[in-house]
Each structure stands twice: as structure tokens, then as C-alpha cells.
Length: 505
Ligand SMILES: Nc1ncnc2c1ncn2[C@@H]1O[C@H](COP(=O)(O)OP(=O)(O)O)[C@@H](O)[C@H]1O
Ligand SMILES: [Mg+2]
Image (cartoon, rainbow, N blue to C red; front, side, top):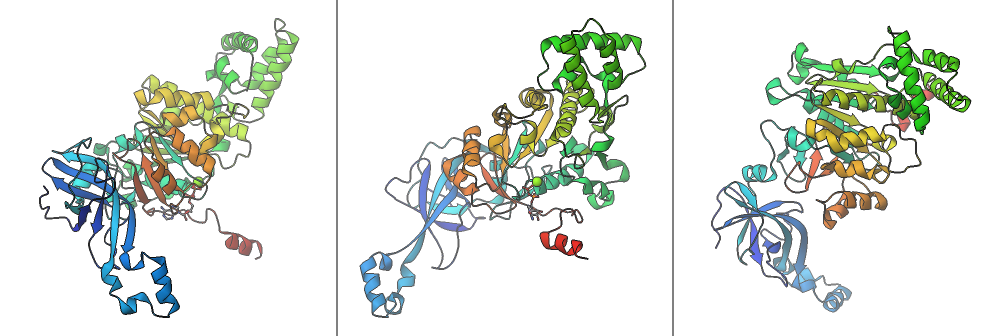
């Protein structure tokens, strides 16, 4: 038996089909005139029963009209030049059947697994917003306002804990809206008040896309000068302090150093620490190695050439810029702008060093919980063993262990298939934007449990700025239209025509 549900609009009536209504699926005939669109794909609908409210989602819509069921008859009238609708009341016989998939049974504010089939004849209504918010586990008060549910007016406001506490992967083909979404996320994180809980964020900004955030006026976000903190650090200013690096750390910045070489380097470093207690740089280590007669010639040559290679990156020195203690502060966003670097190796060295520092300082609780946002993640932790991947093991460690002490990752990639599966499978949350490459889709399907075939297919049809959220963020996979950002970067990537005109001036 169904009861009335006053606030929500009536959408239709459940009908019998070959297989339904069953526990997980049912169809209903949609109300309204022949050309009205009353129910849309993706709509959340409810049926109130004595045992709780069944919440389902419209998967497919089929329009039927018995006048058009027989191709022969239609052809006959067509060839006579008399459209069927001029003779018969065809409009009156058109109707729409909505096929739905049951998402859950909502009972006293809790979701339980559905265990009965709804009755044919039951009245179907749109799920009212309050129920939908609780059912999806959104947080209207303190959540992040990231956009709207697709085709709905309901704001998509997941809580910070649900979205970020178990790592987030943002996946899509290029140009689908990943970085735009990250800017929206950063805007939201920046505008949080102290009592809402403020995360500290470190962004590896490979293309310098987010540097405009530092120019936001605090009052435009409703913040005081003191509450607003964005620091922009250029790659060319970065200095990794050599005296803080153990031999293993230097070894990890050089692909395939052998254990014998690391052992020798460890001894050299411990000796040099004693002889130069006020600090030293790579050149000092090089000359120390050169003068050390206990190291075999082969090891010596290899060590020296690696050390010189590292020194040539100009990333190493006596000071520490940035000082990780000072960049990881509640509510602060630090942009590590690597857009000046062409060399992948240099980018990797910076990422590897920062990932290591962040994790070890967080482990010792010397810095607050943080979110580490990594653009082009497949360049830093690739699946393939044949690619240079200096930061890979560090990022994998954060992925595996970081969530326990709130060292969190947000990984962005346009080539999910190239991203380490270890890392991807540790990201309990995924925001998937448009993606048409079948290999990438297959990879996404395999690495995320919460995704079914129809949702996977729908990913190919998403528009720019639309995403499917799966995982812990919402209780069921949900399509979202990301909101426009409040602040626009100026003249970042000119269009082709703009660039051509500029060159022709
Ligand atoms: N949610 C959105 N709303 C409006 N425009 C968007 C949205 N998402 C993306 N765009 C447009 O698409 C362009 C490409 O998006 P971007 O995020 O840079 O793609 P990518 O996935 O390669 O990072 C943006 O510059 C913007 O113009
Ligand atoms: Mg991008």
C-alpha cells in the first residue's frame, strides 16, 4: 500500500513488466501530456510504503504509441500522403515508461538494503530535497559547494571528510574540466571558516594554472586579511637542503643506485657532517668523494657523475625553500608552480622531496593534516616500470598509509591507464569527468568498485564540467554539474585566434 506524500510532485504510477517490479528495478508510466518532459534520466524518485521510502533513480525512458507499432501500417499511410495523426488521435496514445533502478530503502533516517518489490499501481513522486540530502549524505551546512546534481536544482555539497579523507582521484580526458574543478574545490577550501575546520593544501601546479588564486581579495571571499593565506612558490626558487638528506634520500632521487653505492655515500655523508657541521652542498660531497681513497674507482665515478647531475638541476643548496613547516598551516594554500621547468626529472625531484617531507613531518605530527594536490599524476607515479618515476614509491606510501594520519592525496590525471594501479585503487573517492578512451574507461571500471556498466557508458557522454562522483563522497554514484568558479584567471591560456592575433600585431 502507498501513502500520500504531500510536498513532492507526482510523477507516475508503477506498472508490471516482464521482470518487474522486482527488488532492484521497476518501471512506471510517466504522467503528463504527450510532449511534456516530466521525468528525466537521472531523476531521484520515491515511493512511500508502509515499510519505508523506496528511493530509486530513472535509468532510461521509453516512449510508446500503439499507432506506430506496425511498420507496415505506418508505411501504408505514409505512402498515401496522409500522416497517421491527421486521421487518428495518435497523441492521446503516446506515453512514456521510465525504467528505474532502486538505490535504497530509506527507513527512519537510515538507508537499508531493499528487500521487497514495490506494488504495481504505487504512486511515484520526485524525492523531496531534504530526504535526498540525507540519503546522499550531503552536508548543506558545512559541505563544499561544488555545483549541482545533474538535471536538479539541488546543490552538491559533500562534506570535506567524505570527499577528501580517503584520497581523491580526478580522472578524465584533457579539456574535460579537471583543473577547473580543482579551482572550484580550492575556492571552497579557501573560504572556510575556522569553526568549519580548515585543511592545509599544497598544490603541485604543473602548468601554473592556479597562481591567480593569490590575487583574490580576501574580502571577496568574506574573509579578513588574516584569515586568507595563499602562497605562490616558483620552481626556480625551490632549494632542497642538502644537509638534511640521508644517503637513501639522495639515492631515491637517482634512479637505480646500488646498495653498495648507497653504503659508501652513507659513510661519506656521516663523515662530512662531522667535518662541516655548519652545512654543506653537493659540490662539497663531490670533492669529499673525490678525495676518499677507500671507495672503489667504479663506485666513485658513478657517485660523482650522479651527484654532478643532481647539482646541475640547481635544486639543491644549504637553505630550505620552501620550509615545509611554514607552508602547511590550517586554511593555507601553497602553490608550487613548476611551469618554468621543462625537465620532467626536475619536477619529479621536487615532488619526491616534498612528498617525503610532508609525510614524515605529518607522521611526527609536526604539521597539521594536509591535502597534497598533484596535477599530471601519471607523470609522477606511472604504472609502467620503464618510466622515470622518482616520486612513485613516496606517493604510493602516502596512498597506502597516509589516510591513517590524514596525509591526503588528490591526484589528477588525463591518462588513468598510465597511473599506478596501487595508487588509484587506494583512492576511495573518484570524480570522473568526460572520458572516451576505451582503455582508460576499462581501467577506471576495474579500479573502482562502485561503478556499474550504465554509469561507465554515461562517462563517454558527459559534457565539459560534468562529473560522476563515486566512492565515499556520496552514498550512490552521482552525476554532478560543477559550478562556475567565482574568480577567473586572466589571460592564462589564450585561444588559438587570440594567440595568432597577438603574434600578428
Ligand atoms: N564547470 C565548468 N564550468 C564552465 N566551464 C568549464 C567547466 N569546466 C571546464 N570548463 C571549461 O573547459 C575548459 C577546460 O577545462 P580544464 O579544467 O582546464 O580541463 P582539464 O580537464 O584538461 O584540466 C576550461 O578552461 C573552461 O573554459
Ligand atoms: Mg588540466
